Image 1 (cartoon, rainbow, N blue to C red):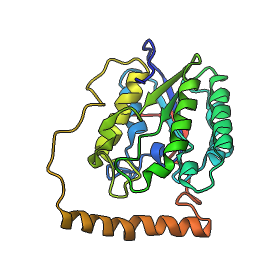
Image 2 (cartoon, rainbow, N blue to C red):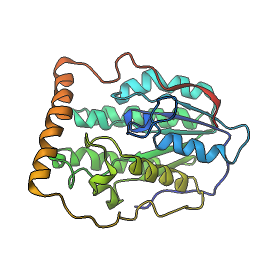
Image 3 (tube, helix red, strand yellow):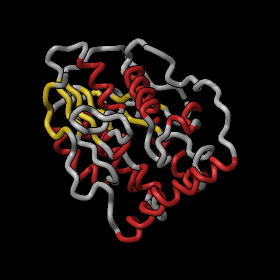
Amino acid sequence: MPTTSRSYTSYTSYVAIGDSFTEGMCDDLHPDGHYRGWADRVAAALAGEADDFRYANLAVRGKLIGQIHDEQLATAAAMGAELVTLAGGLNDVLRPGCDIDRVERLLGRCAEELRATGATVVLFTSTDPTRRMAGGSRLLPAILRMKAFVQELGQQDGVAVVDLFSAPCFDDRRLWAEDRLHLSPEGHRRVAEGVLEALGRPAAFDWRAPLPAAAPPGRAEKLRSDARWLGTHLGPWIGRRLTGRSSGDGRPPKRPELLPYR
């Protein structure tokens, strides 16, 4: 299913809520030290069209959909922004025993409450993890169910959907950071363009297009990469799950107020 789009209008205010996907974790940093993710790129594009443009990003890494609902939703709704992006639920799906009914219920409630403010709401389907992530097939049933649910929400007025699942370019590891969970700068650039396209903005480039062909890594290089990933990323992630900790514990959002963005 292609990205759900609409007739384009400019926006003067934008709030992003969610987890690390929206916080923008990658190795591309603003001068102030914050990550420059896809939401920041969307804000920069929209700021170029409105002199009084304002932007807030309430997303915090590691958050589950219940935490997004409890900690970010009311604040975002109270800001009264014209545009809100909402991404959440994948951290829940990554955990064994995920209550997918609850995830859908809370995601739907978030979307409905944001729509009630008069905002345009942008939602996302997950990318397909099966061709780039070991064990990705275990997640696929829940991801497919979430995909269908989000696309159903996208049939409502005031909701647009960016369909990342159907973009095979995200099978390419070059669109992902070393941890294999977060996007690379190029991945963020493409998601940002997908959001702008969903809003009806004329496309600057084909964000779904595959990257130029590259030689596959050799066996030795792949083994070193896998070993580094296991020790640096997967091991600590499992450790946090076992101890009930999150990478976002105690971390405030990087843009907690709806302020001018330039």
